[in-house]
Image (tube, rainbow, N blue to C red; front, side):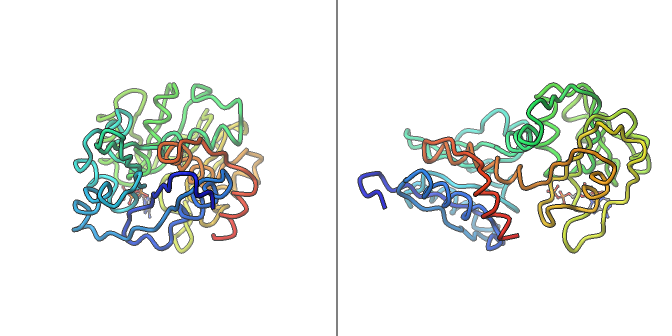
Amino acid sequence: MATDKPYILAGVMGWPVAHSRSPAIHNHWIRHYGLNGSYVLLPVQPERINDAVRGLRALGFAGCNITIPHKVAAMPLVDRIDPLAARIGAINTVVAEPDGTLAGYNTDAYGYIQSLLDAQPDWRADAGPVTVLGAGGAARAILVALAERGAREIRLCNRSLDKAQALASEFGAPIRAVPWEQREEALEGCALLVNTTSLGMKGQAPLDIALDRLPRHALVSDIIYVPLETPLLAAARQRGHATVNGLGMLLNQARPAFQHWFGVMPEVTAELRRLVEATL
Ligand code: ATR
C-alpha cells in the first residue's frame, strides 16, 4: 500500500446494500491506480439516513454513493445540489468538499450515455425518436440524460399512464406520454429503445413487447444487468439490433464519483468488466 499518499475513504449507503457491486468496482480502481484508501458498504436504515449523511465528515469520508432507498431522502441532507441532480430529482453521490460542506450529484445520467457511447462511439441522441419504457426512479435520470444530449422526441410508455404524464409535464418537451397498450406502435421509426422497467430482471416476468415495428438500425438498451442479456436484448439481438446491457451504466456511473473522491477519472476496462461479471 502506498503509505505516502493520503488515506481516502468512501462507500455506498443503502438498505439493503450487501449485494452492491460498487465496492468491487471502486476497490479495483484504488488498487489499479496505486491509491491509498478503501470503499466500504454502509448499510443504513431509512430512519437513520439523516445521521448517517451528516456523520460522513466526522468519520473522515471523502463522500459516498447513495443508493436505494435513499436517493431522494438524502437530497435535503446535503448543503448543495448539482443542477443536473436537481433536475433528475435524486442524488447518487455525496462529496465532502474541502470547505466543509456536502455536495450532492447524480452520475446516473452520465453513466447511461457513456454506456451507449462505449457500445457505439458515433451514437447520437438526435438520430431519431426514442422510446423509453418505464417511468420509475431509474427512468428519471435516463430521460434527463437523453433530453440534455439533444433527443428531439421521447415517447415515454408506462403501465401507469399517470406517472408517464407526470414526468412528461415535469420535464416538458421532447417527452410525450404514451399509453402502455401503444408500446409497439411507439417503436415505429425509433432509433433507440430503452427498458427502465424491472421486467426481464432475474426472478421477474419478461417484458411483453414485439419488436416488429422497430427499425433494424435501432439500438436496444436495457438498464438491467442481472441477467446481462434480458429476454428483450436476446430478441433484439436475434433481429440484428445492436444491444447495450445495464452493466455499462453501472460501471460508468461510478467513474465521475471516483474522480470526485480520489482525483482520478478511472477507466472501464475489459478486466473490470470481467471482474464485475464474475459477481453477477
Ligand atoms: P426503478 O427505481 O428501478 O425505476 P420503480 O420506481 O419501482 O423502480 O419503477 C419500476 C418501473 O417498472 C415502473 O415504471 C413500473 O410501472 P408502474 O409505474 O406502472 O408501476 C414498471 N413495472 C413494474 N412491473 C411492471 C409490470 N408488470 N408491467 C409493466 N410495468 C411494470
